[in-house]
Length: 382
Ligand code: GLA
View 1 (cartoon, rainbow, N blue to C red):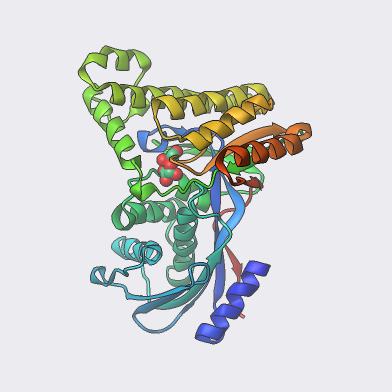
View 2: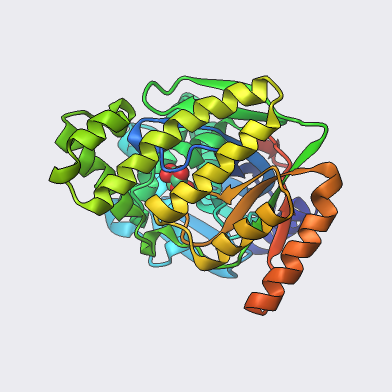
C-alpha cells in the first residue's frame, strides 16, 4: 500500500488527477538456468516484489513518464525515430513499439512508476517493468486482446531490439504468468507449462544478494548464447534441447573447449529441471537441493557465469548444511537462491552475513522469497 500511495500522490502532483494502477513482479528460478534460449525447461515463479505504475491516456501522441526511483523524467513519441536517451525509458518505449509492430494500439499516456524489485540483483526488474507496461497498455488500448504469451514476447523483443540483451523468455513469462504459491515448469520449445504448488512447510527459500552489480547488457550473456547456437549448428539441430552428451562428445574435437563446456552444462541442466520437478512432487527436498548444488557447480565451472563472491556464498551454504544453494539468473553477480530448513534459517543467514562481511567488507542483502502473482491491475482510476 505504501508503494501505491507514493505513486498515487506523485502522479497527482505531476499530472493532476489519477490513472489506473498496474503492477508486475520480479521472479526467482528454482532451477533451469540458461536453458530457455536453448529450447529447454525452466522452473520460475513470480515474487512479492513488483514494479508498479499509474497510467492514464493523455489524448496526445506523446508518452510522458516519471520514474520515482531514478528521479528522472522522459518524454517521447511513438515512432521509431523517437527513442529516448535514458536506458530506463527505452524499456517502456520498446514495449510501445513492439505492441505497435504487432498491429496493436498505443496512444499517448502519462505514467509514474516505482518498484521494490532490487535492481541488478538478478530478480528481473527489467522484465517486471516491461510486463507491467505491456499488461497495462493491453488493458487500456487493446481490450486485452493480446494474449499473455504475446505480452511476454513483447517484453523479450524489447530486450532484444532496444536494450541489447539477447535473452530467453523465462523472465517475462514468469512476470506475466506468475501465480501465488506456485512455481511454473515451462517447456521453452513448445511453450507448454504447468503450475506446481510450492509452499513447503519445513523449508524456506531465501536469496542472499552479493551486491555485485549484475548488468546483462554489459555482460558476456550474449556470448554464452552464441556458444550454444554454434554447437547446435555443428550438431545439425535447432537448439541444444535435442542434444545428448553422446552427440556432444562425438564433435568434441571439432569445437572449442569453451563451447564444449557451455553445451555440456546446458545438456545436464535441462535434465535437472525434470528431476527437480519429480522430486518436488515426491516431497524429496534432498534431491531438489542436490540438483541445485550441481547447477551451481556447472554454472561456475563449465558455464563460467559465477564470480568469487557467489562461489563464496555457495561454500558458506554447504558448510551450514543448507539443503540446496546456487547462483540464480543470468549470473555475473546478483544473488544465490537457497533452500533452507526452517530450523537452520536464522543461523545460516547470520553466518552468511558475518562471513561475507569479514571477507568483502560489507553485508550481503537477504530476501525471503514469497511466491506471488504476476502482472495485474491493482486499482481502477479514482
Ligand atoms: C536472464 C535472461 C533469461 C535467462 C536467464 C538465465 O535472466 O533474461 O532469459 O536466460 O538469464 O537462465
